[in-house]
Length: 434
Image (cartoon, rainbow, N blue to C red; front, side, top):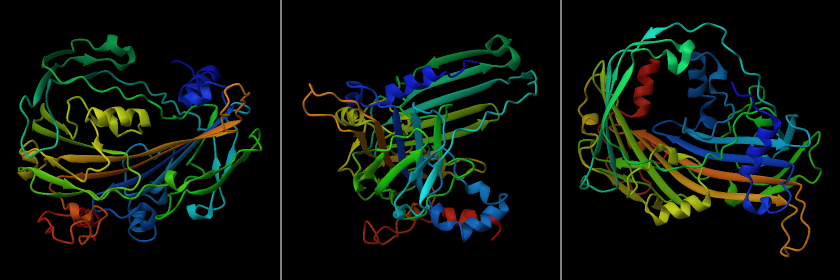
């Protein structure tokens, strides 16, 4: 297993820095702040449910630790609520605990404690060899908003796995007798640069197992921040502008059965630069035969779920021109008729199609001292801060989308009739036996 060295960690940090910083001396101290607003159909904000339904669920699920977030909490859509991730790399004293003195509006106390990642726990058990069954997977790929399926769609691909014995101790060499046959083709996927800050030695993070807390509903990141700790530059005090704060909730609504063209609509999200939607459904024809249907709102093929990551301003601008992302002015999209038809058939055990939507917010950089306008002037930045924001919504086709964080009388004046499908609250109530 390749070990992470301080040199590798420093190289990763340099790659994540803005171009302006790389033209001068790289700051020794770099802070990365991500905020996300997630919206799961029918579920209240996690930050507001801990005393009521959340407390009840916590008891059912093994205590409050079930709802304690840990880094990273902002990347993948989860329960409804606001999420905050902070990572710090300080080359002056790597991996040393630090404090972020936060504004009162964040409602998380006076400061947040950033800690290094806990040592990885290695499973000493020996994996046993096992049999791989014969499996067939068919993939159907669609793209574009519109009531009808576009010419040339779907793209189809099939994969047949002929099983055999696999020995996990030998890796790829242990896949004796396993073979894969493929036919058809799918679109070439888009490359999305990985600019996330992962858990690595030499960095410190919040939330962490010791100090992680759910961000309260309505909390605000905007205001004065100061980073303190051993080796932290004394000058590391900055102000987070309203433009870099948590984004509003993405109020996605749908009308129509999955067997028909499904109309999606949403009110504009303040500070959103673009939108993107994907849909996916896995259908089981038999125990060893599956069909995966995927769709995206892009006008061109190849855009997949990897685009739901935080995107740079340059990527957003490029993909808006290529009509891969929906513009900030967009407030609607139609899922083509019939592509998720079986999701409405009500078969027992069938999983409905899942929709995922992202509103991309701005990315901001703060560098101290600021770069001089005169390139001849010396510039030795002490620290930098990167701030990223996004808002997401997740839902299943065939459920009541009117519960996606928007009262029924918003957006269309209450003209959209409620769908006669089970809502997420009703399903949750049934599962909990309440």
